[in-house]
Amino acid sequence: MAETDELVGGRYRLVELVGQGGMGRVWRGHDLVLDRPVAVKQILLHGGLTLEQRELLTQRLLREARAAARLNHPGIVTIHDVVEHEGAPAIVMEFLGGPSLAAVLAKEERLPAARVAEIGAAMLDALREAHAAGIVHRDLKPDNVLLAGRRIVITDFGIANVADATTLTASGAVMGTPVYMAPEQLDKQDVSESCDLWSLGVTLYKAVEGVAPFSGPTLTSLYGAILMKQPRPAKHAGPLGAVLATLLVKNPTKRATAEQAADALAAISRSMPLTVRTGSAPSAPLTEHTAIKDTTVSALDGATLVTTAPNRPSPLRDPALVLKAHTDAIREVAFSPSGEILATASPDRTVRFWDLSTGRVVLLLDGHASAVEAVAFGPDARTVATGHADGTAVLWDVAAGNTVHTFNVPGSGIRSVAFSPDGTTLAISSNYTTELRSVKTARTVSTLKGKFSGADSVAFSPDGSMLATNAWLWDVATGQMINGFAQYNGRINSVAFSPDGTILATAEDRTATLWDLATRTATVLEGHTGVVNSVAFGRDGILATGSRDQTVLLWDIGLDIPTRQINDHTGSVDTVAFSPDGTILASAGADRVVRLSKVL
Image 1 (cartoon, rainbow, N blue to C red):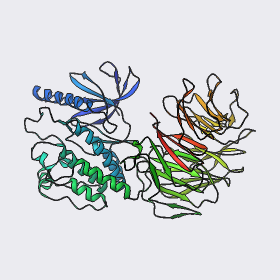
Image 2 (tube, one colour; image 1 turned 90 degrees about the vertical axis):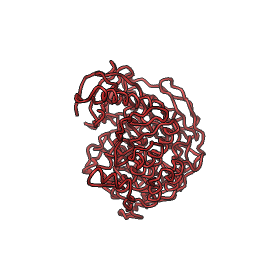
Image 3 (cartoon, helix red, strand yellow; image 1 turned 135 degrees about the vertical axis):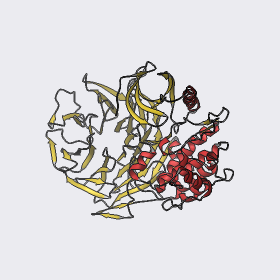
Image 4 (cartoon, helix red, strand yellow; image 1 turned 90 degrees about the horizontal axis):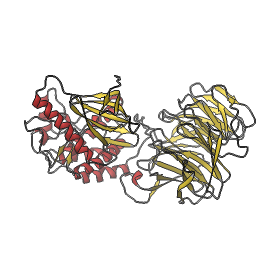
């Protein structure tokens, strides 16, 4: 990638070129004033353009900024600023690190129908927001859809048609990408919201089938196919095929509306069985009850989801959700790296994987010989570790449906498992010892020796150099205890490092303690009336604590005070965890349910 120290608008440093097309160049940049990453889109004004053409392109980019800046929706890229650079405007936008749908399809060829239905529902929600503001995108395609964690974001309103503005295509030129354009758009008729719905249909068809519904060896034949022929039959869409057919109706007056399409996609999401999905690389479906030694892997459909506002298309929009399926307490919850899947471990001898976009269990690890006490995702999303009361830990490849390794660790049972940030090492802790094992070879990297090597909870520091076992710190490279840190000699139930690695939080008795690793000072957080079982860091200095008093407290660690209390549990709260982006808090425990709460 090209790099530069060039400044745009006096404050946006261009760091890395991330994309380029016929109309613009997109950079990953850095806002020096607000100290945050941004995306900077520069217009490409080629030397061969006439003055009139240069002016047209400049107006077009300004119009993009004005149109997109009117919108405020998580499914639409946010515009921060418009500045002039080298005689042309540049748009400064939020930087989203996820791949485009086009990039995912280039790698995977096609996606499962259930996933495409979810993507379509999210895109429709964003389009309805834009259409309500009088904005038509005009160039909707997989390249303009970003999969950024749980967010599905439409980008590049660069040729959007603002209904109350004069069109820039007075010369009669067709603007857009022909294979995704509606028949009336190709026929140079008035562009309406219905054009975007056609483009949505083509985009979803491409995503689920791996090919576009219309094709031709020449541009003329492509135009003819779109204007005159029926789309090629869908082979992989399943029930999604009916929705695609309603979107790909050539007469815009008979084409499905956004509301009709949204209702149809919501119905599909409620009825279609799903398989494990992790990040942007969906795996092959796991078959029902695929045998794995003495344990079974089951792809499930129909676990109970209770919401405070039923029938919403996306459960994460609700302020609180309840996931129910376990028949015993839930010992630990863990988010996948993308935040799309939540794993739950229970003494009922199961591990359940929940798709948070639907609230369904999509994978079940069943038939364990003993209670499951711990679960953790590896950074590659497909590797999962589980810890069991019989003293074993199991490493799984959940995408392939296989066990990778089984570890036996001395002690009365596994209490905690944790992956190193680079995914190469697994920490496994029992009451008596903690071992570091190689994820690749299963060999012991080191065994922590000493009176305090066993632990109920272990955590790697963000840089992977240290491991916390209870309130004790160890050098991962040497396996030796780090001296000089003020230790706590009582029982520690949970440990967590702050995202920047400067603070270690511990849960003990009825308090949580923040240990400053630089100053070696401790701050005690008091507020619970029962034993604190779990601690977890979110973003922006937020700490969550779950307690036997059946409450969860959210703390501002800068003020050392609780800012919110969650009282919805009916039993001891044994585990809390934040989604990777810090916006969702999962809590669970003795009442056998997982509660998902938005963190504002």
